[in-house]
Length: 224
Image (cartoon, rainbow, N blue to C red; front, side):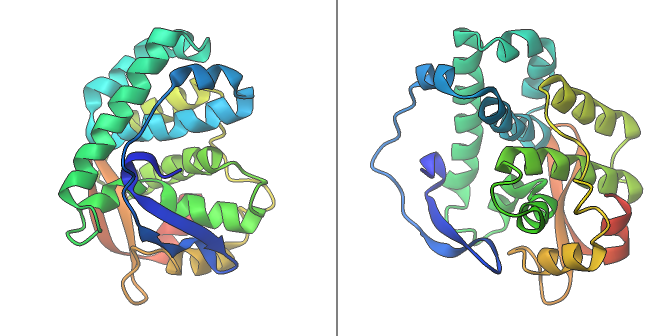
């Protein structure tokens, strides 16, 4: 089910997606009518990754999402076709340039995921849907960017408000938020980590992100 990304992986007790391989599909068929069959929670979960593409790669797409919340929430067919097509286009362009994660470009797709994978693991897989964890993770990552002086408070606010408009969670679960050592431990298993040094994908503005190295655990935890 890796779509245009070409990644096939499984979770392990040590973390999410740590065991896998690259295998590109012969083709990808997208039938957006299937979205009408999803329960509300699963539908909303998918929208978190759509918001992510706007934040990391396309400010105009992010603004379009802000302007079309009602149509998307109502599952308007034309709106859904647009968000699926644009998300696939944006991801495919990145994958084309860095299919096997050799240049570092593909890491931009992991915005919010360093936090998210920790939250998923500690909450127990299946407790938080992946998109729900990514939603919370993006908010934390944007706060981290703000703390490091890389983004404005207004850009964080726009992300929070759009995620809330899609009825996605923005707060770390109560049974996870105070488990600081465990959260950092999970982050150290992240594939972007170099040695014992945390790396994060952080926005500098809506539509653009950068890899930030040597983030301290204290700064990461301060943004929960």
